Length: 278
Image 1 (tube, rainbow, N blue to C red):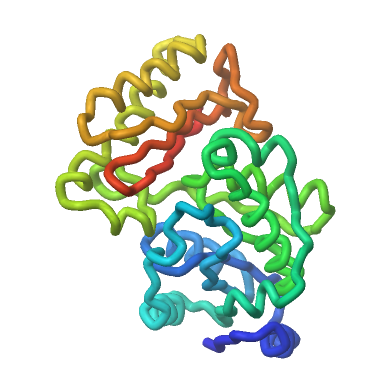
Image 2 (image 1 turned 135 degrees about the vertical axis):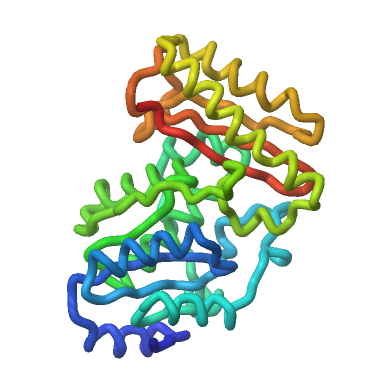
């Protein structure tokens, strides 16, 4: 496995990599959710590139950029063991040199749900992902379903900007109690970790209601909130949404393929999760 930290080195190494080429962008602090992306990409491509970059432009002023978990040596060992050919691990200065002032804005899609609570977040996501696509030029890029809005944003970028690659969604990887795996789970105290599966259970309540024939989206949202409100350690419910999975328009009547999503805060940890109604 080769590691590039500069854009010129990345370009040189990519010249000798056979295609098709898969890309797994990460912010490090790898867990089994990331490895599921790597394993699927490894199966489906002749070559595999992963990136490790904690992108500063997607963090707000009150968010956890400085405290975001980092362990690059561990991450590199895991990627090596899972057959990654090349890792791009740039500095912030390499990605955003002095004078950088070009941004990708996905419009209304990035202003709702997460975007409403984290202004500017998806401008940062859209910009860095577009840069990585341009630098690596992958045939396929792999993202987890856990970040459902991010997945919708990236698909929109690829479609609207004619980037000519396939965006592959990989199902959410969960702990045995249902909690979606996330690097931020490391922030949870033992008591908070014990409470956190309420997020998934609350989504499942709405899915069960849907499976039993309920189509009123307000009732599904209320069911999610009722589950969350029953857990004393849930301090804030930012949203409980039932929306079209691509446009993220909130629905009056839920239909197959709709995304039920939530964001909550337990202690200092903000947890997001979603389920697709099938």
